[in-house]
Length: 263
Ligand SMILES: NC(=O)c1ccc[n+]([C@@H]2O[C@H](COP(=O)([O-])OP(=O)(O)OC[C@H]3O[C@@H](n4cnc5c(N)ncnc54)[C@H](OP(=O)(O)O)[C@@H]3O)[C@@H](O)[C@H]2O)c1
Image (cartoon, rainbow, N blue to C red; front, side, top):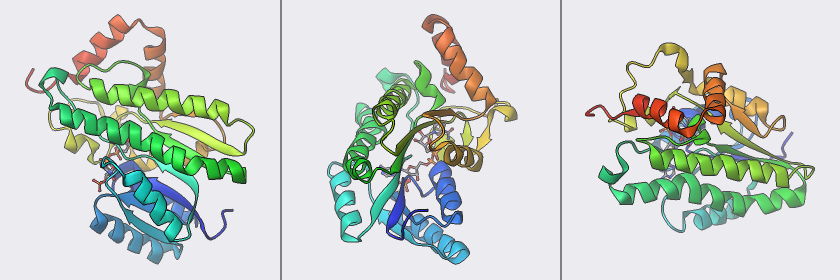
């Protein structure tokens, strides 16, 4: 069991998978630190979790796509006397459309949040875990990280980075007492899709969808058990297809599925 100052720090805890992870971990009486931009949503969740479970819940507002945010977050964690025992790098977003038509500044912001912030926070909090010989880093990638994704080119590339980076770390840290896990969800009902307005998911059959709580439950159970978790059977099949079919075929299949509404 973690000691009182040991926290699970969850980025992107104000909605979706991050919120579901926070609810489950707080329910297991783990102290949690909730990170995102929307303080009001974090405070509301924190109040609810404290009332339901009586545990320690900290709120840390941060825009992780902004330069300096990682250093400021580490400093605030230190100032509050918290120890990051588990780090969950979950915050992320996806852009959708033909790359040449998308604002490049937003693509760079996506790389900053999905990749650079994840690497930075891992680099800031992992050394102390290795020194203590315990802890966990949970990085949320996507089944889209298993191969190229036309119309979500930058997004899938960021998730391929997360998958590769996390598997490498898991191998490096074997036998150190620190667990490393890459979580690869597929279609999950969260705010993610609402934010990708040009991607019409209305025709997706219900069996491809998972809930954020299902993803969170599987992720927590997989810590210390494996280095990569692909959530659900459908996504495991998709990841297998990416591995075994030539890219010329998968890009056609994925491109057909991801085509923008106006195409
Ligand atoms: N939903 C899916 O189908 C799906 C599939 C595969 C992978 N994923 C991955 O799962 C992770 C969680 O996504 P979700 O589905 O739960 O989506 P979501 O409901 O949109 O949650 C995204 C979270 O990231 C936070 N966030 C966004 N920009 C941020 C920033 N600049 N700084 C700090 N926090 C920021 C958001 O909070 P604020 O807006 O309050 O900052 C929110 O809490 C992402 O990495 C996503 O790529 C999702």
